[in-house]
Image (cartoon, rainbow, N blue to C red; front, side):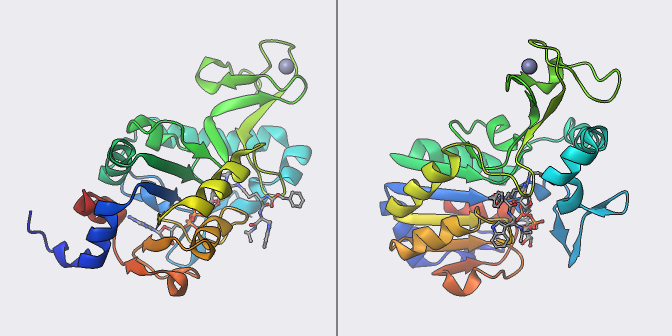
Length: 247
Ligand code: BV8
Ligand code: ZN
């Protein structure tokens, strides 16, 4: 299939891709950009909601101060997501799960589009916008089953307030999620970093761990990032156009 981008994939990468058994893919907002999901840092400016930079409204502090405002922010984003579909990048990554005997998908995205494309056992480092968690008994809920009469939904088990089941700034990642991702990064032969500005930690340390353990590091992004110099290959372009070229 001759496309304008055919040259992007080097012979070396094709060989590595053909021979690899253990592959790790880390994704960020950029992998969902072609589905219409706004990224956080595009074109140099950061998303702002009601005058607050996103890492303020999406912070543990804001949850303490104003839970209804936090729900309003995630309800707005969830409504945006309702009609959006996975793009060819999500579909390619889902296909890779069948191709490699030891395949691991780690995402910073809370949009659930990888799962909608058929990916299984996705390591969601920052939670999911489709889940809520009880502030009291910790019970998780599917947000689609909840009523938002007074802005903050109640736990169907104990009646206490629910919060979005996402990891906010200043909060620890889900128990075991980062550790599992780091462990897989230490043993993978090939690590793809797709659509992330690698600014947010500890997620951004995953490719560093993989590289330090000897993995072949490939970045897919229309822009260079702080990780580009560490990469064996930098594929400058849109994930939805480049990932399908690999197979
Ligand atoms: C924590 C869920 C421990 C909520 C998110 C070390 C150094 C400095 C700071 C810290 C550090 N360690 C911890 C911190 C603090 C903080 C942090 O990293 N701050 C940053 C801003 C410096 N980290 C935390 O708070 C983490 N917790 O450390 O806990 C702890 C606890 C208590 C006390 C002490 C320590 C928790 C972080 C998780 C926060 N939650 N999301 C929500 O979604 O609202 S983070 C959120 O932002 C995303 O999940 C993602 O991680 C990040 C956005 O980054 P990207 O996804 O990469 O998106 P971005 O828009 O930036 O970039 C898109 C890229 O795609 C661009 O490069 C663009 O060029 C590219 N692109 C565009 N189109 C395409 C494309 N690529 C391919 N194809 C295309 N078509
Ligand atoms: Zn409860």
